[in-house]
Image (cartoon, rainbow, N blue to C red; front, side):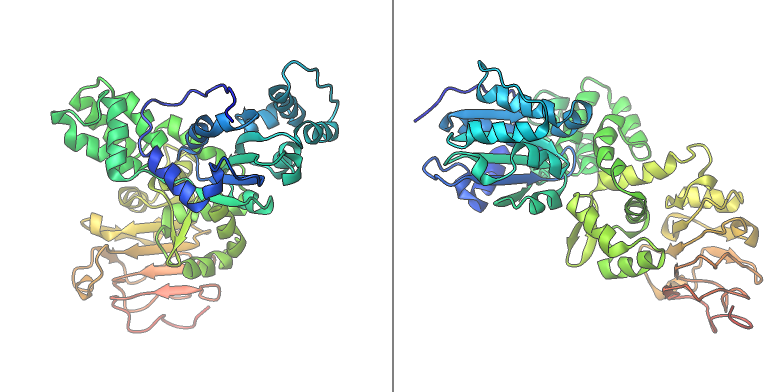
Length: 459
């Protein structure tokens, strides 16, 4: 039996959507099976801009005619904060019985009425952008709230939220592959499914930068539409340092709800540890009192990072967002940033002796520099330095002979807060006099000129 339904507006260029819905159906075939009488709750999770809402809308349009009652509650996170849970309950009750007056004075009355109105009806309910368990408990608290054959679909950035609510199936929204990304970008940038002849290389550069994020492909495609090659080149250069603010706002919403130590872990991963071994990173961040086992788990649940082969991976745009958050600490004075990870910025701060107590970590890739002379004065104000990594892209024994760093023999740097020291090709025969190593948890001095760890007594 089919029922009439109101369709939702979706983008006309739904690149890769059929494949993703087929993938979801393979994981959980009951989601679109009209003969199944079981009530099922399905969660779609992923970070901002990955296409969760679009997927939920397409699924809603495809299967909605099978249900007696359909309701798509959009912007749950935003409306819950600005208007309250009672407003969302009234919206759902209006969708159920639009001609009846549903008087409820509080959330508890709303829960009772939703259960009473829906427990014998076959319902399709979509709750979009959920970020708090209270929202689920107020709108879809249990399977027995709904009649046989009902389907509840929830989209969120927080996988753990779905696990706590004991959803029947979870589906991670995935980024587009390169071919799909090129097509989606071109529909927005050129109004056709392939790049214009003179723009092929530039288009591939944008697609590589966005790394399969649908939101980024659409936003940048629309922004670059009709612009000249020179304007494209200029914008791409800018994007390497300043992320698009429309994309940034969407991604940063999840960062803003993290607590202090979770934010610190996120920034450390974005600046220093993307692609590193999870146990290695955990050991260092635990030494920084960041409660890394818990914090890394939260970042995974909220889709900031993924763990593959025990390595921590962060999407390119999330990494750039983290580095831009650091840059915004003091845009015109990198000496006051908490973390330095761009080679030319590190070079500038060290050679001009701009360092301050704000600096907690330095990452310097020597492969991108010619020569650098580092003095004790360059480090003297960095009393809070926790992490120092100086390295080459390609490790080799030649680093000892072709050392790009010049240090004076009496060179010193602050070490009381140091937890991680990684300096490949260190040019001196010992660490500084009075080097404090009590709290150091990781020391890597490969290809260095060290003959002994330190002169004199270890502090």
